[in-house]
Image (cartoon, rainbow, N blue to C red; front, side):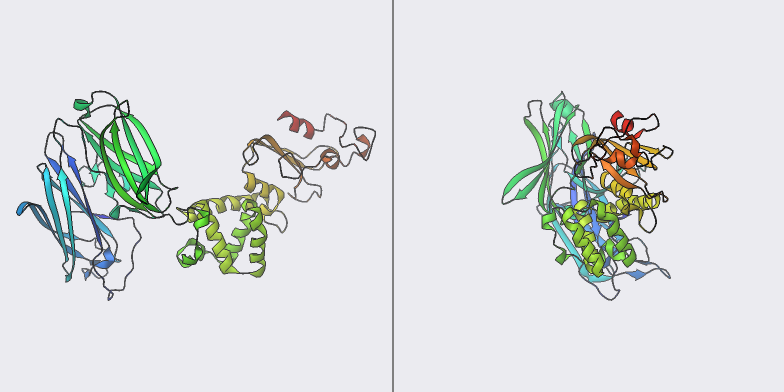
Length: 484
């Protein structure tokens, strides 16, 4: 029996606190090339629901007695009995197993009985109908197998490996909020004999609600007919709301006529997807990444987020910081990133704060964080500019920088510029002087302010009304702005 340690969260349980066995069992039917049909049975066991025995000074292990029967009426068509051991570990972890059974085509009653060898009263029963129907002269599909993890593997002796990939079955056909991708495996048989030409593979995910189906995801691919076509596919489900769904894998001809199909229901939990649906009353922040932040890190993070906050939230966050309400700060920080990335708020936060820390280091000036300076704020709000020109030696002008964005999605503009200058001549104390970005500081007198040390070279006769400065070979700012 092959055992695979799962990637799921390790469960900690008090050794004296026992509960009924928690196990997820499922199956899928397949056809071997030139051989009989077979059934794969997948076992997923919650380690904390079993009784463990100490097998070493620090290691413990659980053991299950597993009985598998395939019946046809009162006749037992196939029988198997084996011991399924958990990995020997210090902590109790979830684990899985897989068994394959070759069977003739037909309909069977699958019965499975699992007994905890260290607690005979702790048992789990499973019953299901299994149908194998793969005649050689008909277009057929295997059952659909939903997958919890997929990785390349050349270990052909590992029963979890098919066609060069390790594939671990998804327990309970349930996707948690941490799951952003749906992986599935399916096989198509005898398309070369039945179709004989390219065909359409159609994969859909539909939401099941009030007895109706609504298609949420549709993927069509062209396939060339073969005796066996293995399908290992992934679909982005990060935007699916919590609920019940149906995955369908269909074979259609060129005219989109349905030739064959398989379907499998699954559930999706995605509580933070819709900002309007977020209810922090039911969220335990102690279980989230914000609980790991110190008060200082929390304040730093919120200040660093200022450039990307909605306008209406800026004052709210400032009040939280002023009142030193750490609980409110943690709640806001978590909800903000949960809206950005419902699957992994911690990842979204981490990616941003790394950039913010680099901006802080690059643009820090005096007693201000780098992201509180005009350049740092602009960088975080609009991203990295396509071009930066820095001038430090122009006569009659303090040091200045011109940032250029060729495309500016925030406002739908092109060739947007920001002009920063350092009138105080203090180290890196650049402030914004002018921008043509909608909503940003637009200064018609930017030339006069930049070349303040050349008051006698105003362009025009009206010293107080004219805004330009006479052209000079050493004055580059206007030319730079007009060249983009």
